[in-house]
Length: 289
Ligand SMILES: Nc1nc(=O)c2c([nH]1)NC[C@@H]1CN(c3ccc(C(=O)N[C@@H](CCC(=O)O)C(=O)O)cc3)C=[N+]21
Image 1 (tube, rainbow, N blue to C red):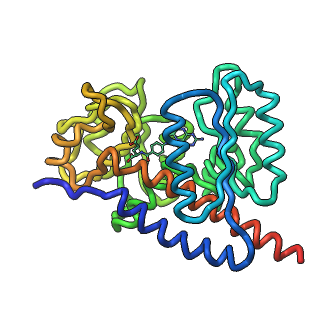
Image 2 (cartoon, rainbow, N blue to C red):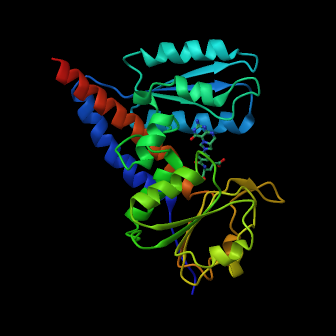
Image 3 (cartoon, protein in one colour):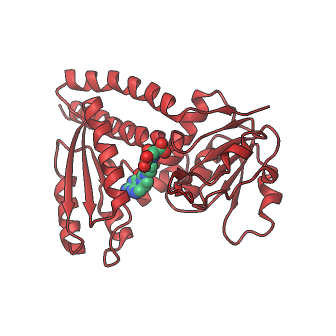
């Protein structure tokens, strides 16, 4: 039997419709959510992603500003720009598109963003709160995965979730969000030996490896939920995930496609965090009065 396909576009649409209501009540209180996007250098993929993010903002009535800089921008000037945006009342979220050029330290840059505007959820304050299961901005891709499973009514508690990849922006935070929901979490990575011994135990498998056709039928337990975070190109230059979709869908219970799976959810959670930040600024403003 073939797996159910988890439609990320449809689920993203559902959550975006909900956000529209939140945005209209913010506007009734004279607050328009605002996102500042900073793009340094000329990475082609980054341009595409930034365009998609800004288009999604404009569709929902979120104000967005793009700050585009040459590759040669100094770290000091980037820090100064972020500090200025930290103080700007109409900006509720600051996103610095990664990767940054070699001469700029991403850790310094992320730490410059005010935690109250850290809609990417990358700041150590946001990470620390996530790890200790407090409310905060959660990294958009992992949070998008959780929201997707919630929409699909896929239980998490007590399930064995196997995460492939331990990056700071996907693998690591994904494990914590699942742990916070009482899953048993196993992390695998490039130094894991006998990888398929672990993947075969997964009730929910999350692959964030960056290699096309990395996950095959023999790596999957019958009926497993397979979440593909990969953004790769196949031999023909087409966008594809880490999972050999056509093969694995015959064994999995539910599976996300690429494109049209996790990607649209990532952007939706960026919108979600920006709206949440605007709501929190309104509450703070009302408390002051
Ligand atoms: N500060 C920062 N925050 C990020 O969130 C961030 C980043 N830097 N750097 C790059 C990665 C990548 N990323 C994606 C978001 C959406 C899709 C997405 O929507 N993909 C579509 C297809 C896109 C296409 O057709 O090219 C899909 O999967 O259906 C993909 C990738 C966010 N990132």
